[in-house]
Image 1 (tube, rainbow over the protein chains, first blue to last red):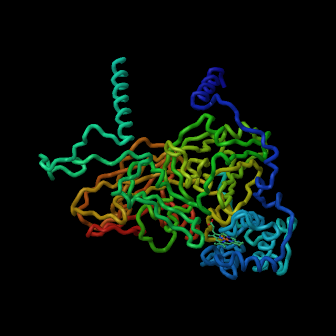
Image 2: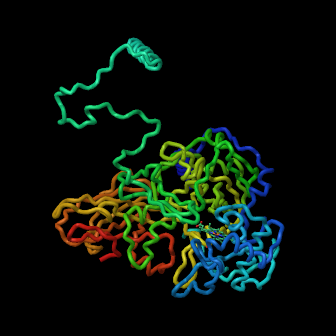
Amino acid sequence: MSMAYKLLLLILLFSSYAMANPVYQKLGIPADEISQQAQWNISIPPSGKGLPQGQGSAQKGAEIFAMQCAACHGPQAIGGSAEPLMGEVGSLGGEYPEKTVASYWPYATTLFDYIRRAMPINAPFSLTADEVYSLSAYLLSQDGIIPANSTLNQDSLPKVIMPNRDGFIPVYPIP
Amino acid sequence: MTSKVHKNRRRFLQQAALGSVLATGAMSLPIVSRSESSEFPDSLPEWMREPGGDFSNYGQPSTHEQQVIRWISANPDAPGNGVSWTPLHDLQGTITPNGLHYERHHNGVPKIDPNKHILLIDGLVEQPLQFSVESLMRYPMESRICFIECGGNSNSGWRSTPIQAKAGYAHGLVSNTEWTGVPVKLLLEEAGIKKQALWVIAEGADAAGLNISIPLEKLLDDALLALYQNGERIRPENGYPMRLVLPGWEGVLNVKWLRQLRLVEEPIMSRDETAQYTELQTDGSARQFTFINEAKSLITSPSLGMMLPDSPGIYQISGLAWSGRGKISRVEISTDGGESWTDAELHGPILDKAFTRFSLAWHWQGEYAVLQSRATDETGYVQPTREALVSQRGRYGFFHYNAIVSWEITEEGDINHVYGL
């Protein structure tokens, strides 16, 4: 690369970015402390990192489900005014595919993450960690993904292998 | 110059005096009421013979335009869960009025007090930082006109029979806005990005606590932390006090009511990037992280719900085209269901990842016709036919439906939605 060409490139680089060098005052405040607080750590990755302590049984989960979830998701969690959550495992490639937690979701950690933050939809963030473990255990045991009468906790939940674990093809990064 | 100031000052003093008289209710000068012996009794409309309405603090559309509304479809058991469609068929130009921007809420519109809201940037950064809304208002801002389209827009197109809904009420989960805010890049760089960071989990402060993973690359490219929508502060239903705007990328990633950006190595695999916003294919596998809204177009007029009154007659075919990959380079129109095509006129400015208005005058002779528009973007991508899209993706993808839309014109001038000739 010639010197002149390099210079041209440099000029182009600077002229094409309107805000290449904006002048402003940095106003962010150090947030080491709040970054550690539970209410800023609610996303749970497949590794299970960040799962709260606690445990819950499928049996307990069935009771909570009947009280707090069945009205919208149906008594057997096979759908009502809201999505079906159970059943239809193995249907995805067939003529009538049904996406449920059991048939479609790749990770059990997603179930914990989502129920805790969003359900029941009329009272988000109202369930205790034990209740969310119980509900997860109940839902996953319905289709035999975990044995009936199982208990789940922060160690066992991430180890659950969902039937559709390898069913997703990432399209990003775009070629 | 001086005299003008004086004159204005004198008028101001007079008005001020009048104001105080009015306030005490002691009017010294009579206000004459209309005499019946007018020279123009009925030949002029009444709104020219009477003073008009009052000033308003915040203007509203004409009472004659009350049918121009978003169409709401929500879950009766969870009224905050659903969508409302932009009435694209009733609008012209390219900018969506703020009150008509489409909505997709997972659990209602939060009533956020901006004084209690913060944005936290943490995870793989040198220094976790929090920003108040007030402090963000002091950052250098950029404006960007772009569309935001829900990944689920037009999804009725996957059904085996065409739905008979107005253009906007089937395809209006897309809107086009001038967003103004702080480049996300500035804030991430202020926190200091660690080398391992590749993804960012964005989280909203709504009652769904919506969380989703976004490639860091996009946030460093053209993402805005938007604070303004068409010049005014963002509407509550569009993310007040702040939202992400990721030009060209599907709606759900443009997280509203943004409260946190956490830099991480891998996607979080949240519900809205696994269970939803992924596309099931015929072999049972699903496409994931399909972020870009591919090129699409739609004839908004004439369209279903309208009529062609004159036969024969001349009609201005008009519509919108957009692409998440860049600028629209061409829109073609067919009146015979795709047998033959004519280039439409593109109305400038043609912006990157934004609505482009197109039009074409059409001499209708009263024959049966099927109107279609087909967009091409600057990358050369051509909007597919429904047949091509379905054969490529199957019928259960649910998201990212961008096929050509067909309006059937009957010999009587009625308009129906069809899937081609």
